[in-house]
Image 1: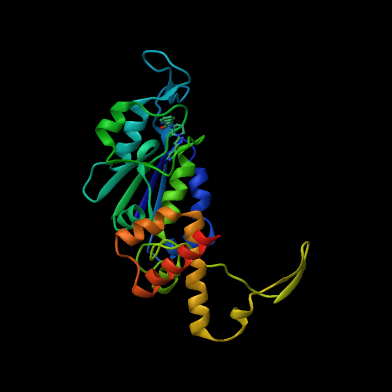
Image 2: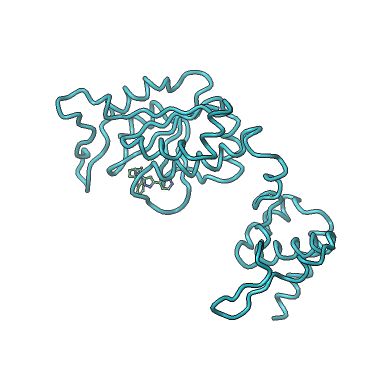
Length: 253
Ligand code: 9WO
């Protein structure tokens, strides 16, 4: 996979790729990365990249020509390259979409600033508009980091299959609570202990306890995931039975 980020502030993304986990994937040759600074393609004396919107309106838009030159330099539109614009107006980014994107040969991520980019760029260059959620950020780079982080870890050999399988959203349930040393620590609310079951060494009981905790947390925080998992047949018999038990117990409260 190759990530190309087209941005006015590529140093934000450069720093991310310089961190340990991403740099390890780059060093291992599993992931390639390059950033393109749009301002390098603004040819006027002041390297102007924005101007007022036609028809009026608040703020400024990113000029199409510097962005188009940067995208041409990035090779946007060439086979094997998928160009994505991060925008609140895009389709919702999910784990399934992250998995889909992780299989691409190259992703070109366009990060907007000001009030957005000229629609002609979207019409001529953008394959996908993707939103990471229903909120407006100060920059597209923040959303690009989320997309990169969620997708690169799904690239084959970046992270072990076992770790990925254990993670939330795999199997349609949120993660169980986790604990590490010390066994007891003196918290502001008194002695905070690790649940006894986790000290029992009884692996089957621990496995069932963790499954129940996953179901309880998903029922409270993300009942939509439970419904979707049931509809999609993601849960085995044991899980479905436990979901019924937990749901019935919750209704009696
Ligand atoms: C801002 C905006 C506000 C309301 C409706 C649509 C909108 N589109 C944009 C936009 O494209 N803004 C540019 C990118 C420039 C300002 C910073 N940008 C941005 C991207 N803000 N928030 C996002 C974003 C991207 C992906 N998922 C959620 C938010």
